Length: 529
Image (tube, rainbow, N blue to C red; front, side, top):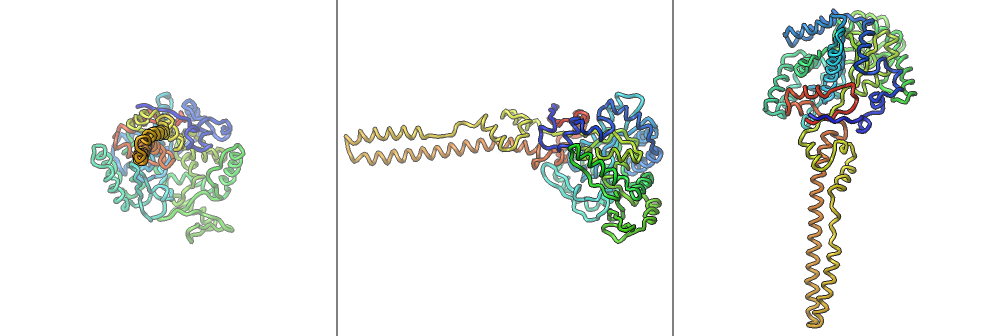
């Protein structure tokens, strides 16, 4: 395995905010607590001890969730480690995209696993466990109902509505059948189909299926998958829901921070509302708005007085769901977390939250930018090398790639005008000799030379066409490789599903990625597989 490294800025696909954080821009220092490094994780552990969580409830609820799909005692022993006050978590989070969706879902998990594993190697006083929080309460179905395998889009059609993790899975069967057809019958395909079957057969809802599926894929690497759509967890959010309703602390503070963020030269992120949580019902997740002391749902006739809504929060906290502004708070009051592993967009909105966390007296974790990875096959790399191209060349616009190819391999323009001129001179000499012998032969000689010159011009056209076709074929080869790394001119990790690669490399695929992962090295990693 060979890995090449490229600065985000050189690739031209990453936001200015992302580049600034990953390159250690000092203007961002006021917006975070710990510079991302393995050494600082130990400092985070020392400070985290002052922010307690209910470890008994945490272990009980994760255990209950896992009992829904496994009876392996070693898993429950592993989960029970979280009762130890010297055991912390390194967390990432994502929506339950269709069978994990784009590759970066996997990269997030592996980044958390790698950061945790390296911390555990370096420290004996503390231990960390990597966690994936599966955001099953999200309700934007069109954000996650699709994936792409070998360039083919697969779309899950369903209109249940509400929290996606609560969707019934009956409508998924045609999608799974289609995926099976694409995967074929190889040994790796059969292995992957077995994991899908185990995860999606007999589960109550999509959230549980995805929890099981990620465990089947990555659980052996030590990551725990946790659902936060949970009444016991939501009870810990009661004071924060109430604060948001009565004091609007998050609305006030995040707005202020966003102004400072903008003044420092960075783009504002998530929109903060006066009320930053939703109301959940069986098939909806609706925003709450206040109008003259009455609280109502945007897409429903439900309404409450302030006292009634406070009573509902107190007695049925499971009916409330934090939005993007309160979700990080929720995560950190439930988990004994040292660090959050996220993509560039996530890191940007976390950077707007430090003052919010301080106001609410919640621990603000280290922010670790997940690994960004590109995958290129050995065959494609050999083709690039054959034409003297590098991975860096694929960062160029298409017309620049073509120019580079032609500058290397394009021959001089095929032009026989000089040869035709020489034939004209020859024709003239022959006609001069013919005139002396027989004047009537001059016209016949001219016709023969005209036919010959016309045939030569036809040969010239064919040579030009053949030359162009040869170049076009080779240029298309290079552009096809570029489109694999940058599908639709975007990043591969935001498009392709892991199955496109797993089917070729099997279980070793995840281990290969884990070896290359290092979220503290914030460069694009291009791996030859």
